[in-house]
Every structure is written in structure tokens, then in C-alpha cells.
Length: 362
Image (cartoon, rainbow, N blue to C red; front, side, top):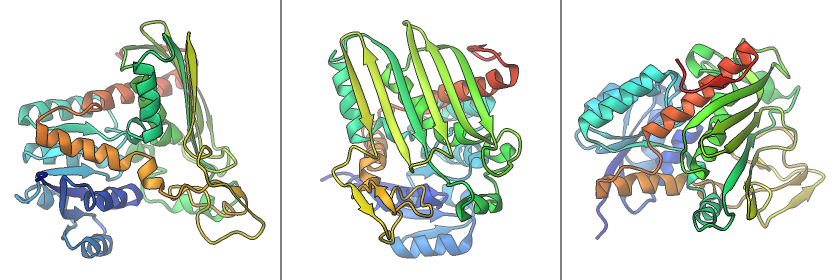
């Protein structure tokens, strides 16, 4: 019989609720608790899954029934929630970005080692079935020696839409002290880790970034709407990261992988077998549950029938719990979260200085 790990989720926004849902379906999981500072949200999700609901993460991490938890709170709280959980002896998985500073990352890594628990950085692209298949081809030598990997992660908030206006009402996202930045640290961070993953996590040597602010409505400084980042790695390899919030056409998640003996093109949202054209729309998000926008179901749309599964969340969470059971360190862990964060921070520094930045950061 499969051993079940008693699990919990802290933070029940869009992605946190996805984590909670999967924890009720993964064979190795027994969801026992959820937590959100918004009492009504905590009660709703707790009732949905028949588990205990908390509003204070300090209380949840002291719950002796919880063995492992996923941290999906706003970015500025990642460090505090993770450290509290680690000190309580819990196995911890943290959503992107790992945290907001290298000092915070170092403390999280040290606390995980001290506690002797499993530490995971939850990068779903590294577990998405089609992206994993590409990695298997690369690992088997199907492309020869890799030299270039391009990764695209963007969406379309739609210029002038209600969704664009509503973003100004968000309590923390537009405060760079709480979010850490704009599209690069919120979305492009996926692509940074995917490139590292495809190259087998080599050492990054140099970073250069071109960033555009406030394509649409005026936003605070360091809340960029578009970023293009090039990363020079050891082993004569280059990564490109493309991200933006006004890329018309809806959610875009693609990659191009080049070797001296072959090439792979990946497209999570437009490779699926369902293509829909409608003049009137059909009353759903049309493109992605993560970026519902006005008119996304009008004209051509590419809905994924089982989006949450195909994007890798189920697989990443199951890997986390299997590592807890087997006593192994996850394939993507806090060290990877730290190195990804360092590349993102170097990209911001590159933009500010107007030239490439060498790593490690000083």
C-alpha cells in the first residue's frame, strides 16, 4: 500500500488552490490542512476538501498532523513561511520565486539542511509531460551537444481592458518591495529555470537584459511589462528568456532547443489537438485559466482540456511527496531556486547599468 504524506498548502490564491486540489488526488498525499490570511477563502477551500482551515501560518506549521507543505503565498512572504515551517520540521516546497533576496535564499537553504528535511523549488515546467519528453530526448543525445535554449513565457492582459484596470487594485503585486519586480520575476522566472534545467544546471557566467516598463497603464518603477534576457553559461551555451504581459494572442508557453545534431520546438498552448474558432465566444476563459481575459474565446482559441495536468503541477507535487517518502532530494530544489533568483537579480542590475553583469553577484 502506498504511504500517504499528510500535506498542507499555505496561500490559496490561483496557484495555491491548484496545489490543494492536486493534494487530494495524488496517491501519496493526504491533504489535512490549508491556510490563507483571508478567513473566507480559508473556510471555503477547507470546506471543499473537508480539511482544517487556518488563517495564521504560524499555527499551521505547528500542527503535528502536517508532515509536508507547499508555500504559495505572495512573494514577500515566501521566506518567512518557509523558515517557520522548516524550523517546525516540515518538508517544504516553495512556489516561484524562491524568495526576494540571496540572503533570504541562503537562510532557507541552511535551515533545510539543519532540519534534515526535503526542500523543493516548485517549477512546473520541469515536470510538464511534453517538456519532460524533450529533456529525455536531450539526455539520450538526440540533439547532440546543446548550445542554445530559448524559452518564452508570456500572456496578454489586453490593453485597455477591465483586467488591466483591475491590476491596479491588487494589494501586493504592484509593490516591488512585496513582489520583487514585474513580469521577469513573476513569469520569466519560469523560463530561467527551464533553460537551466535543459542544460543540466550549469554555472551561469554572464547576464544581459533589455526591459520595457509600462507598455500599458503606468506602473511603479521595477514593475516591468516586458523582458528579454540572455544568459551565458559555462560549456559554451547560451539561454534566452522572453517574457511579457501584453503579448497579444493570449497565454504563450514555448521553447526552442538547439543542438549540433538536432532541434526541438515546444508549444504548450498551441500544440494541443483542440482548436476553436468562434465569432460569439463560448463563455469560458478560452485560452488559459491563469490569464482569463476579455474576448479570449472569440476568434481562434486553443483551450487545453486538462490544463492543470498538462502544465506539470500534478507531476511536480507527486515528485515532492515521493522524495519525502524515499528520503531523496528533489530534482529541482532550493539551490536551483537560489541560482534562478540570482540570474533574475543580475538581469535587473544589467538593465539598470546598461551592460552585461558577471556572476556570481557581489
